[in-house]
Amino acid sequence: MLGVTALLLWLSLRSLNLGEDQNKGQFLWNTWLRSNKTYLFVMALVAMVSHVIRAERWRMLMVPTGHRVALSSSFLSVMVGYLINLVIPRGGEFSRCINLQQLEKTPVEISFGTVVIERIVDVMCLLILLAIAFIVEWDQLILFIQSLPWSSDGEKFPLKFLILGLVGLTLMVGVYFLIRKNERVQKIMEGFREGLLSIVRLEKKGLFIFYSLAIWGLYFWMSYFIVLAFPETSTLGPGAVLVLFAIGAIAMAVPLPGGAGSYHTLVPLGLVALYRLNQADAIAFVFVFHAWQTLIFIIGGIVSLAISYAILQWRKQNQK
Image (tube, rainbow, N blue to C red; front, side, top):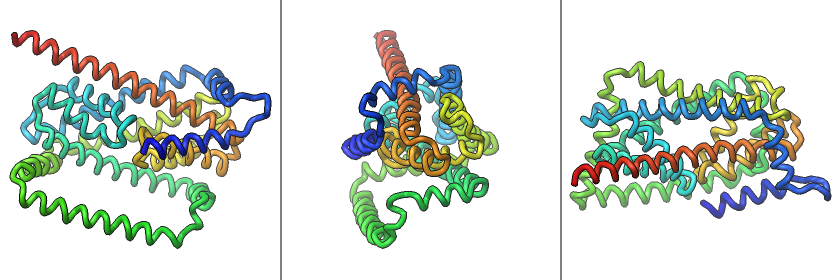
């Protein structure tokens, strides 16, 4: 996955066509210098609010399983998960459960079950967002899909899906027999099932739905503030932001570290094909704002990891 990411980033930078006297690194740096830092810091603030709400939503799911965890522990674990996701695609989902176990003694299999529920709800929210985007900007999104270089390669897709389906079926059968023969695995699956059923036993389902919608609403505003932060994109309206947000959400869903590579490939295509943005400006815009977003994850994750470690060390000292 890291190799695919590196390849996509290289291809994206390679398509950054500048004059002979222009340096690509300097061009990207100048794009950063031209950005409105106020909007970027507002975007960072909105991002942190969304992470706090996500941590509270996760904490709500843990309550029906019999584990009441502190919001601070949930938030620190969520941020650690984001950090790990930058290195191991989807590894953050498991690592945040481990971090929560260290802080709150919650079984990993139970907390991981609640994370899976979270992801299912997030996929539903993403589908709702995509539906809204297609309703509002149908012509633009269809035009974008038709402009993709692989959109005409329809004959190869059925074979790919068939192969993936057979591999998935084989894995499912293997997991089934593994569970049947292993008591330890059965115990883990029982805890996982308990985590999955937590959403059925939620006391405040309306509040859970509100938090889920709020998280994705804040994601949209993050995109809007980013667009406003750069002169090249500041004139784009809310409809364009919705389209770019939909494209970006699809790119981020690709199992690559932090969406790197897929984001740098798809979003510039959308900016150029739909809004006639200069290709060099589109690529620079995506590189700079994705780097800013990644920096937020890195700083937040490292600080959260350090705080978690400090808390554990402090507890260990007090137990002596």
